[in-house]
Length: 183
Image (cartoon, rainbow, N blue to C red):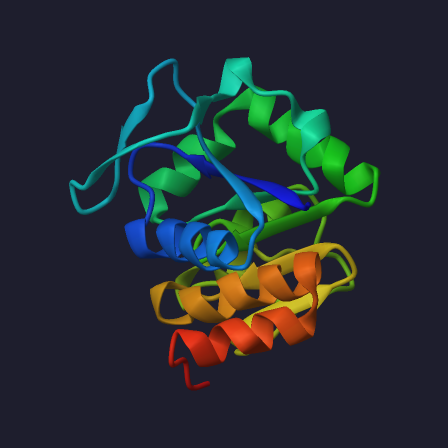
């Protein structure tokens, strides 16, 4: 069974994070919500507090097939400021394992040089941070083992794309029908 970690920092965009968790769990993917802090409750950008499955310092990253970064301006800044998480993003990228980000969070990949020569997308006001990327306005871009998406309005597309990568396009297509999703 595939396994992914979705990272939560104060100010995360609730829909972007939880749509991925929900869609992927429905597809049978094991999803862990991981706080980058020493506590399990994390407040989102709209003051919604969600209890995490794990905290960062107690997480074994060798168990995961993918790392996912939700957006939100403050949430993205807080994720990027977390040194340990940035080390894991670098390690996953270097090892050819999947990394994914939505909304403002693809800017982190841009700052790291990960997007050079790749198709990528983000929230429109963060496109200038996608350094070296071929920026698109698509809802989701998958470039090798790097997945990016634009924002809250593309969160289900993002979740289905991640599910498609981890459990196959047929399963993701079935899920889209089950949740009455129309692209």
